[in-house]
Length: 196
View (tube, rainbow, N blue to C red):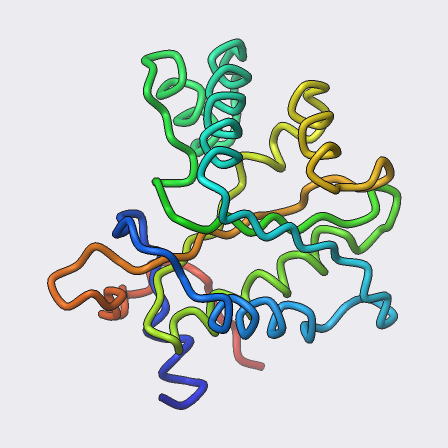
């Protein structure tokens, strides 16, 4: 598929088969993230590629516990409210049981940290779509950046003390009839354009 088709047909996948993604495909995905633009060509993103089911399960429990202890405030981001409500009910799995979780961290005092991570994540989502894999942008770990237990655990996995999570991505084989991502473009309801 060409670049335009890839972008237009990329959709978030939230249901996955329990099937490993090969190292070869994951390396392609990660490489596209590493080649994303970065402010001043800083190339300061740090990719933590987690395939270990026990580590993912531990993160799921930690995230659910942290969100279940939070309270919803006025004007809070709707998706964060949803994470809190689902965690309080129990059984919340922030990463939709995907076999791969890719965390993108960057220097916490670097002014372009979130933008650089987002660019890398978009590249990786497009590569996943091109490889017939599903993916979804995940914010939950970013929202817990200063939760000490979560932070300490991520540091034990290799994240540096001066880094924080600015976005994550899940990847896997979609649980669909044909095993491929849903690709029907959704109509745009926003993203206004003004031509001058």
